[in-house]
Length: 534
Image (cartoon, rainbow, N blue to C red; front, side):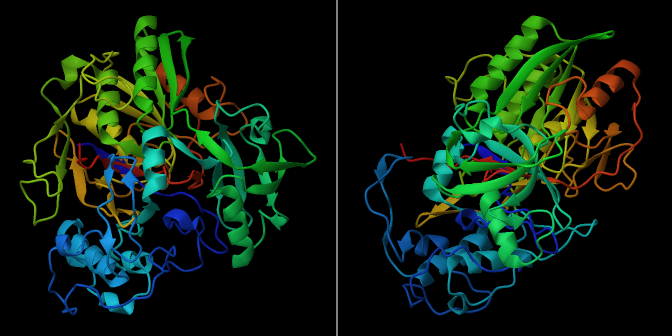
């Protein structure tokens, strides 16, 4: 059983007035309101097999599971077994959501119990099944509540394939005057793809004729979001781009295709006066990352690096088992043997038994062998045996990526954070499919070997001017889009190398934008694999 921790930040990060983070799965856009739905479950609401709603009384979710308004037929490609769906109604689907949330949601007591018959879609009802509390910084306590098409989710989680251009964008300023730039380009896209001619730092001036900098009406915002995050293959969008150093914009037509992500990139060593430093860009905790990570750490181990810079500034998380592997490969056996990587804590209804797997809750250790994601299970992992690590972060560093930071601190590995405050997600979930929609609802919190996991406002470099979150030794540095990732002259990496050489921050703290990477689902989640029928 594997936990997946990540959170959808995804698709739509531009707003007419304020930055709204809504994870609506296939909807692909932010609206001007926080409610609404994605259109899942559009058949009419009729009475199903469930009894009439009584506030505070809940039937077991099993009574409503797989009772679907539009049942799937055939074989589930993920399990190679027949879909469990049977004919039901939308009300059955909503009753399942209500009972399932009451059973498993971490803050189930903070859900306002509302009659499902008053809702016309499963998306709108699911949106209501969460807490409305806020954190100390004023952020929503639960900003990680979303759905995904099950077919799309399974393809993405296992293979890293999703509709896109191969260009990943960052919204530095989400409100007018906006600033949206290219963060990086996937290396596997063909040269014929127009995105291959883009480069880090190129600014988006317009999309499909809409001013990306100044447009303020919702229709324009919808157009911008649709262009930044295409939801299907074959979409064509016209971008006006201003390249770094250029004075004249150029027009680029981007056409979405199935893009395979390369989770680990640009692995190399950097010679410094104080020793050889390893660098790797690690963007995703997806299944294919395992093989790439093993190869990367083996390469750096063979090189004999004395320090490591782990660039996770755009890594929204993913499988916790992969995060555990990464943490072990950094620290090695001496510091991690017998230690807790993370202990999951569910709601008060489930103090000792994992309610999804049925297993007794025990700490997850630091994995010393591969877990079978994309490398045969049981192979010994390489390790660098480091007592410290430099991590490069932004607000898009989230969930399983934050677990790496927290778990290493739990075994006294010195983590030095360069960049800006992380997203703040010590929580996770088991993706749950019902009737073709996969639901992601916070089910547990993770704590490290020191029983610490309270960072809902993220980890923050020590010298940040306006602090929020948990302070970590390091330097507040703005993301530098004028240099390539991995370039020793790039501002964040250069600051890490400066700290490695002198033990001090080489630049004054910067005013940091709370930028977000625009990548379809795969952002900010910590996920556990659900049991599969064999």
